[in-house]
Amino acid sequence: MDDSKAPLWGRIADNVASLTPENPYRTQEDKPRLLIVGAGMMGREHLRVSQRLGWAEVQGVVDPFDGSIDWAQSDWALLSSRPLQVYADLREACLDSAVDAIVICSPNHTHYETLQIVCESGKPILLEKPMATTLTDAMEMVRLARSYPSVIQLGMQYRFKAQYVEALFEIQAQASLGAVKTIAMSEYRPPFLDKVNQWNKFNRHSGGTLVEKCCHYFDLMNVIAASRPKKVYASGGRGVNFLDFEWQGELSDIDDHAMVIIDYDNGIRASFTLNMFCQELYEELVVVGECGRLVASEQASFHPDTPSEARLQVEVPGHPAYRPQGVGYPPWIEETGHYGATFFEHIAFHQQLAGETVDAATPQQALWSLIVASAAQHSLAMGQAVEVAAFCAQEGAGDFFEGHQVD
Ligand SMILES: NC(=O)c1ccc[n+]([C@@H]2O[C@H](COP(=O)([O-])OP(=O)(O)OC[C@H]3O[C@@H](n4cnc5c(N)ncnc54)[C@H](O)[C@@H]3O)[C@@H](O)[C@H]2O)c1
Image 1 (cartoon, rainbow, N blue to C red):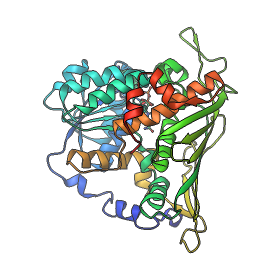
Image 2 (tube, rainbow, N blue to C red):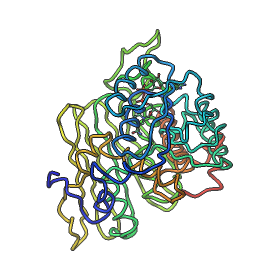
Image 3 (tube, helix red, strand yellow):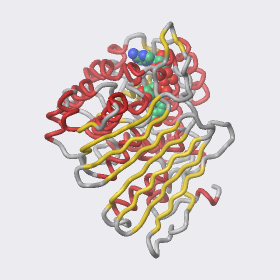
Image 4 (cartoon, helix red, strand yellow):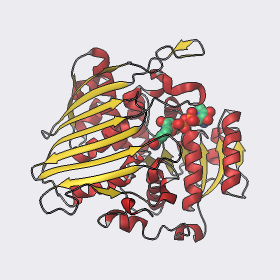
């Protein structure tokens, strides 16, 4: 492993210690058998991660698009000699006794209906982000999850990116910054990629850009703030991307840049900047507390053979990372997808199946991220600040807002 990616202070080192390419998950007996619902880009990442980590078998896939099935099967042939069953019917697939757990990675607007059917199985579920495209649907899903007999883990796997694992450890467990006062996150990146039927070019399919992409960041900000969002103001729109993009007679309506400000109940102030007309990817988290400042950043690229570079800096007197330090997972883990985040998401899912408590997002936490994202999307459309309590009441999530704290 390149030195610049050497793990820092224990947290990541502990996490990767036993994870050589011949890690113990690979030799484990009685591996759970997964069903992948939606065999597109993310479904194929889940196929890859399950096999590179080696914790699970994949029993089969469900996808209405033959092109995705073909793509998944050719990927699968490189990963395993086992057959990959192609199911024509979702309900039948979920109820098949050969399936032990289900990963839902179909497009956002299908999550609500898909979850209703998958839940008939009572089996553990990993559901991709965002949980839904509307708060009303997400609220129903949280109700369903409350009485569900098994695990429902949400795909906010940015929590497992190396720089954020270390940042959360510093902010929470180590309390290195003291009481947090401000949080600023930003993402600069190229435009949305092509998707099957271009669902991510339309607000009604994706939930809007701030829901589709930025729920990851709102989740991290909520976890750090550990408080309910009180007021959200967003300004943004369509600057450069897909201005004339048309698919099946419909013009794209997705935004490509935004600035969002969030006031939390506990006085923490947060901001988020998104710009999606850049050449390269750059992500940054800056948290300032009463004792100092933390900066977690990642420079990455969609260009092949360009490694990512993540850094962490903790500007607190005497801290070993007072000057920026490289942080990352071994390359064989990072290359499985999302710089290793999905890999550790699978480990968390495996631990949940064994009854362990993990740092993965619960349906409630996913709903909090959707609340912030939807309020920001609404603010952007209305051109004024949104009181989150009133917005939740209007969108059918008022009882949830009143009755819960962000945990
Ligand atoms: N966690 C992350 O970082 C991350 C990254 C990318 C995508 N995602 C999420 O994963 C999901 C899929 O995104 P993608 O990039 O793979 O999109 P994609 O378009 O590449 O793949 C989606 C697949 O789902 C299939 N599909 C459509 N309707 C379906 C249905 N009702 N049942 C089963 N399959 C269906 C499509 O045919 C397609 O093959 C989205 O919710 C997206 O937001 C998460």
